[in-house]
Amino acid sequence: MGETTLPHQHGKRHVEEYMCAKLNHTENFQIVANLFKLLDDPSRVRIFWILCHCEECVINLSAMVNMTSPAVSHHLRQLKSGGLISSRRDGKEVYYKAADTDQSRLLHQTIEGTMEISCPELETTGHICGEAHNGLTQYTQEQVETVRELHEYVLHHLDQRITIDELAKRFLMNPTTLKAIFKEIYSKSLASHIKEHRMERAAELLRETTDSVSQISKSVGFGSQSKFSAAFKEAYQMLPLEYRKLYVKK
Image 1 (cartoon, rainbow, N blue to C red):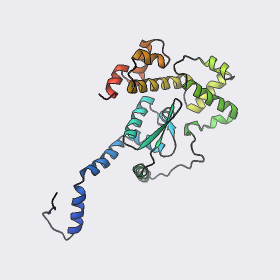
Image 2: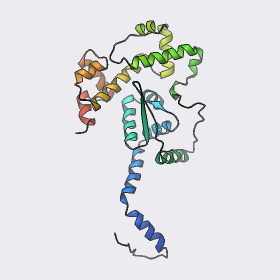
Image 3: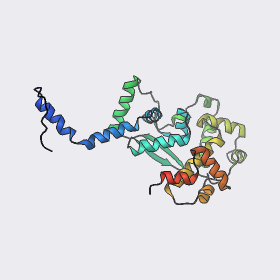
Image 4: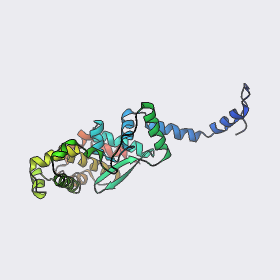
């Protein structure tokens, strides 16, 4: 484009010419606009701020911001598509954290500068923040580690219907103690926690595979497709096929 001549001259021609030249690169301003658009929801800002300080899974995030896992997953997809967060998979669990980019760091500073707050002092790194509950001090370290192992076992067997009594026998722990420690660590009952993971896994399969609803139903431990569809609708406010049509790109 040619040189821009402004209607009024105020003796700052070199500055005005510089700005006009930069304004011609509209794609750069679109990138900035898209970044700020990602933070136009206060819940998404809260989730991003958490991930600037620790790596978290969907279940812990939902407990921290008092939202359903599907709602949190939606915000995470938005943040990840914008390059503000990254993720890693460990077995069946997916963990999220702020991306190591200048954009993420700048937005982090902007949030805390605007709200006049500072970063929390984290004594350890790589620790799942949602597990740091004072109530765990009444249990032994061995008991806590056993429940964490149980958690991993359950995530690797989402296709199976496992009762609490069966888990108690497998991991040699009293069922009442097992349930109490599990709720202290993961902020939800074992049954509720497993159900959320099953729904998240089902949503992932609907988005990323061509498996039938019947196949997916069995993959996440439902013997009845109708019960699976009802549970999925309760979690995502839509039936499985409706979800697939909405999120799978043509």
